[in-house]
Image (cartoon, rainbow, N blue to C red):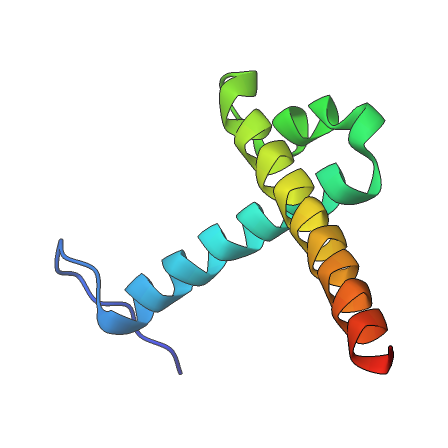
Length: 85
């Protein structure tokens, strides 16, 4: 049987759960912005953001990751071509 602590400060497991939930929410917003950037404003409603500013942060993070991966591939391709010449 599960019992709940009655103290006002969160337990270690509650802190981990809260951190996990926050990470899941951030991942959901970022994933949506990567896979459906045209409709990224839907993240605001899905996650209950008060303003689009928070949602925009997820969009920027997702697009930055995509750009970073594309840059890494391009650098890898150039390095590979240079090593085979």
